[in-house]
Length: 313
Image (tube, rainbow, N blue to C red; front, side, top):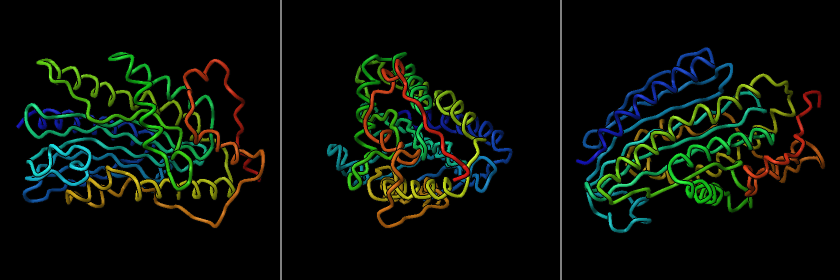
């Protein structure tokens, strides 16, 4: 049915490419965990834990089918309720060990009900514990370049969607500095699938140039116990978003996917404290301005001074 197998084949190939690159950065190979569910489909989870660079990294691909679209999809697209579907996608989450290096998430997915009823969704976003203007600027510039290669209207629209989606409403802040996020990308024209698929494949290819330069700048920065404690506190906010708001987590659990692969997006360690407030004018306090919607591409003309954490504190 449709194009699901075609998309999945490329997703599995991209998974291997990313596993090779990030495994090389870490100096440790990913562990592969193929999985299958009778009558559903399967996939491959590639996991790295307790590495020198990544405390946890996961890159997953799946291809699943079902007789009835799950509630997560039917809620937002009622026309598919009760209909057979196929879905495939790649999901990547990186949690570096160094508190100065931001966590990174990317997800690109394809969903189809019939040959004429299909769509893509996904995007990339960055979640720092310490904010650096050049990281945010470069990240958003790279994503804008990808979008502009296909449609100049996409970046501003998808950035706004990302800012809104990755907001932790009960905290009044975003999970990180955002990125781009889109859903229901489709085109009924005869060549529409090809146009959309080329754009999404280009997005997957943008993962490395968007994130690797940032990781290389931050992975070896000095830090101490105070910075580690702040990182774990900020990871607690990451967990809150993923378990309370994230639609991808709900979709995976509703479709009876591999729960270990679904929940690999969570950091291995996190903490919570009552009413934790950073010191005024500290690097920890500085993060707050990164957690509200901001035009980082325009900001590149006049970047603010970054405040690096002091490992002696």
